[in-house]
Length: 420
Ligand code: NAD
Image (cartoon, rainbow, N blue to C red; front, top):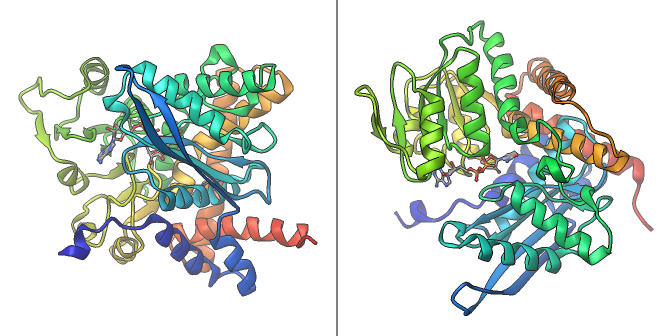
């Protein structure tokens, strides 16, 4: 029971994934060890003046996992559970993800242990500005470029950009992506991760010869990733039967009115059952619903060895990072469930972040159609590359994605050689 209550260590999980993928790559033990370790880690404890006048100390992290293929890239998360190992794991997954979609970025992640739901906008702004200052020695358009993640928003990115620009003495839009459009954000960035989830789900459906029209979809999380994915599934004729937030979910076997539910949630920060077929469900019940596509789009370690045997979805498209543990993976794989792994399924975000960065550096503005067309092409190509590898090597989709991503990073590292 004690073991059951312990938090699953995401970094140990990420390192195990490297071991699994390394079996299919001809790498020397030293290279594997390098890939399993992060490059730079900064821990900061910093003061923030709260609204009541008191000063609170917060702990924040910025970790760069690997920069062999380009500048470090990865989101910043504000959540009470943030710790160093979680940020290490997320930075490693960013490295593989950038390599899977073959864009010239390395991997990084950052976070502050805090509960933004209990903080005012002013307090979040002060926290963001001080945290940016604390980690500014690692940041820069050529060094390390943050983006939004759990409980951070375009507004938070605007404060990061402003603080960094003040430190430099001139505007540096390329230091961060996921900014508001008015500050050099890219059209299509806000929707990118959710759209990528839908594009890869569509490819998975094709593999199983199933139509999108009428497909039953259950989505855990209704934030940037889950909310946008729900809207796009709905637009394509799928039936979104359930969606949740951190408190609870809402379920209608016939399909939810996604627009109404998301509008209500954004106004009142909760769900309410308005139609007689709608019922409240828990996050655990949502994961185990009878559906065609399950999209975990909240946090890590949601599908574990405890519930994997009860998952009824035919396809799992991982909008969240690390929602499935390796033990659960084996169970799902044995049961023939088609998994679109996180480092492929949610790579739409980093892909359009790359477009935003390119536009900032070259002072270009692309249309939304241009962004979406490029995103779709990259997501479809990456899906095909992972699928082909999975079929030719007879390995699960996750292992194939890891082999593709880690293989590309390992080759870049080999070509660069070891200094001195
Ligand atoms: P968000 O803050 O916009 O939304 C998070 C959602 O998760 C909210 O609906 C929240 O209520 C829900 N949630 C939080 N804790 C939960 C819990 N314990 N149980 C169930 N639900 C819970 O964050 P987001 O940007 O949508 O990120 C969601 C996931 O997608 C994260 O794993 C993130 O790392 C990943 N991701 C995000 C992006 C991006 O571009 N934003 C890109 C790639 C991957």
